[in-house]
Length: 158
Image (cartoon, rainbow, N blue to C red):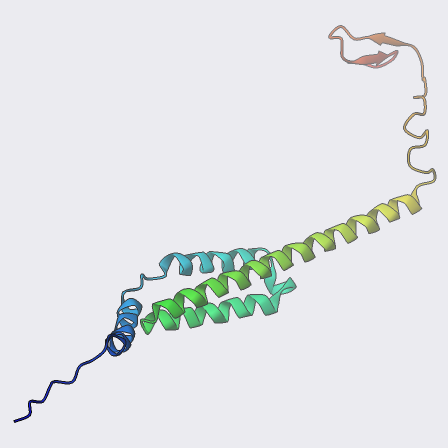
C-alpha cells in the first residue's frame, strides 16, 4: 500500500496567506487620527480668520471638502484614510491661510504706496525740505514758567 503524504505548504504559501491577514489587523488597530483631525480643523479656522474666503476660496473649499471626507472615513472606521485626508485638508488650509495673508499684505502695501504718492503730490515742498526746520515765529516777550515746562507770553493769564 502506498501512503499518501499530506500536502506540504511551502514558506511562501504561508506568507502569502498571512500577509493580507496582518494587513487587515494593522488597519483595524491603527490609532484614531484625532490629532490630525484637530489640527486640520484648527488650520481651517485660521484660514477663515485670515479672510481666505475672499483671497483663497478654492484652497479653503478644498480643505473643507477633504475634512468632510476625513470625517466620513473616520465614521466608516477607515482610520488610515481619515488620517491622510485630514493631513491633506490641513495642507490645503495652510495654503489658503498663506495665500490670504499674502494677498492682504499686498493690498496693504499697494494702499500705502498710493497714499504716499498722494502725499507727495499734495505737498508744496518735497519731503525733507525746510518745512520742518522753519523757525517758529516770535510774537512777543516770553518768560520761563516756574514749573520749568510752560512758556508764557505777556498778556497770557495762567
